[in-house]
Image (cartoon, rainbow, N blue to C red; front, side, top):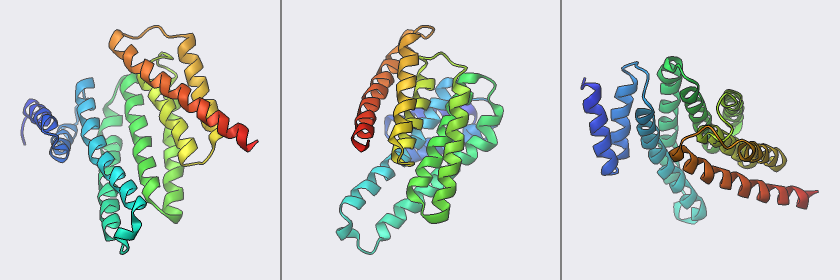
Length: 228
């Protein structure tokens, strides 16, 4: 097995070349060493899996918009199978290594939110009882991440990202625009009322997420009013 430093450098090279699967393999080896990851290392890990899974989510959207070209469903099934393997692998890494070894609030929230996100992705591509199970697990994970995030500053980007993704989950998966609106609005109002306590780089990230929360809240509120 390669040493940790070599794996990190190889992962960065893979990132530069956009070889996401190789990058994920490097970071998986790092995780399996059982040591707590630095902020940089966890960001590398997340980047690799997000790009691998993100490209397949995009592929499924393309297939869905042109189903007549994939009448046999074979291409869709191939992508779904790959996604299930990748999401399952990442959730397993989180449960076995990352969440148990993390000893600080920021990292704990980061990992719990990613667990919720990847369970949500599994819910998107599942059907029937399996889908119901994944939706329940994702909701429980988001609730836990949201509760844990309350320990962070209101304008901390990791806390805001939890709110943004949890609200989107309510809207897109649970089809509940009212709950999505309330969650997004509260996160936006809390962060604007207490914007301090974060560094300059984090503030840039926070500002972007705050704008997304505001825009989503506006959209979801208008839908709720239309339904009313």
